[in-house]
Length: 194
Length: 304
Image 1 (cartoon, rainbow over the protein chains, first blue to last red):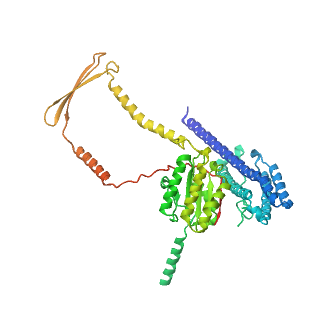
Image 2: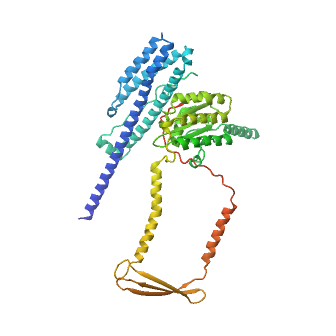
Image 3: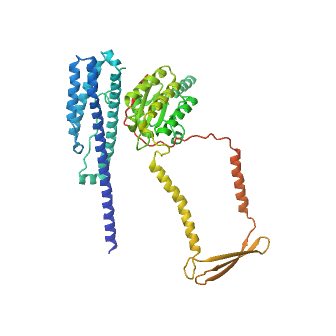
């Protein structure tokens, strides 16, 4: 065999191995992003799970605040319906999901504002425990979003860097969307009696 | 010019009083963390309290495998105690990496903020409501009085008692928190002993190989006789019972003391001196390294 053809075969082999490792790396990062998103949805679900108990506790003290209570229940019901299949995580879907969750946040804020007027409710042990759980869940939502953004950035950088972006183009790796800070606060709204 | 110097010095002193830390600039040494789980760069907590807290945290880790860290500083950069606690937790990696049973208790005395953040695996034992309850019962009242030492110690004790009351996280005593770590260490140890031992055994066997028939049955006979004061005459007779191979080799060996001996002797004496001169060493119990665990950012915190 000619020396030049051996070199050529060697070079091609190296290129193929490099492509394979790049591809696999991107697949791994992609999976990590999907998992991070699943965690975000999980944390939002935890918040949704707290709401029925919270509504019942408030109802015990502020039964005629029907409008506010119903608002929370409805917002929660709507949000539970907007689930995203992790394999279909487009910017549009994410937007819909976040809007639904934002509505839940607003409804909860209104509920908190209303509770301020009922000192007996605030003194209720179960209420204060639920409040602690709610705050903790909001914090966890914030943390999961931060994690998600971090993974998305890693993924995006990897598929955009040269020469990896060629591999990304060939195999159809798309840019993924980050969480944008909501107007006002980076973290989900905290609920506290300060 | 004098006035300016005075003003500058005053400002420097002022800045030096209030140290602001970010999760990246919080000073700690991983080696130090093996002996003390209290990060106290501005000496807000006194030495006695730190030792007491470490005792509680050590007992806790020993009996349940839960790793706790306490941070006491004056100011947090950005005044966001949750973000600070979350980032520090991930930077340190508290708790076993598989079980994630760790917690971080932070206090900023100037900002008047605090947070108690459990690891992902400790959330069942230490739910947010319990964190809040512990803080409201033990932490905040003493913090409001400025009693940092008592507040911190009592809170750590409360956390520890609460966690230890939970049987589900109790690890069997003696099991390692990082099984892959110890099995790796065991393999390395066996290799370190086994490889040289195997090599030596191989050499000894090879020495028995007969150059004539190849069988591992060679016998050697070594005889010495003193020629003069510093020399001995060595005769080695090698025979093979299988094929009758026979060889005699003779040589002289110098038995006088060399300079090397005095050197080694000196080193031994010198080494002995080092040990005899030392004072009493306080036996420091070791927590070991942090496990690399994670948190999901829950827990409870607030201002006092």
